[in-house]
Length: 183
Image 1 (cartoon, rainbow, N blue to C red):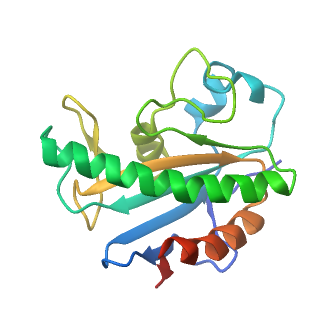
Image 2 (tube, rainbow, N blue to C red):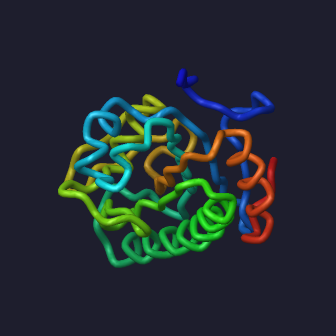
């Protein structure tokens, strides 16, 4: 199987959405990074025989910069994690109902939610750095530097065997149920 670097059928990369408060959400579909390919069995042991899969990056613009550790920032991370989990569960179950193996990576722990956890966690920040080329600040918690949002960005990951065109259609169908509109 030959992968492209990033994919949406319309060529509109990434899928740009906005939530009800006007904050942006960017979703893109990628071939797995070399780190995920090399460490697949250690991250997702049940996926060792799954040769064709895609990584969906979900970036949410946060209300505040996320480079420090404060009560306010931790609450914002939890709020964004919950938003991703609600959206991600709907997307994952939609794809799983179509017989595509799909899993969410818990942004807090780095471990899959539907598969048996591996020996090492997945690193969402490293995936964004590898797949999108964004810089990262390395402090207590690694933080992405988004070209527009700076450090006000919360990354999340879903992994699926669904073809990108199916994932894109599902993303665009499910997003409005979560108050996310395409822009």
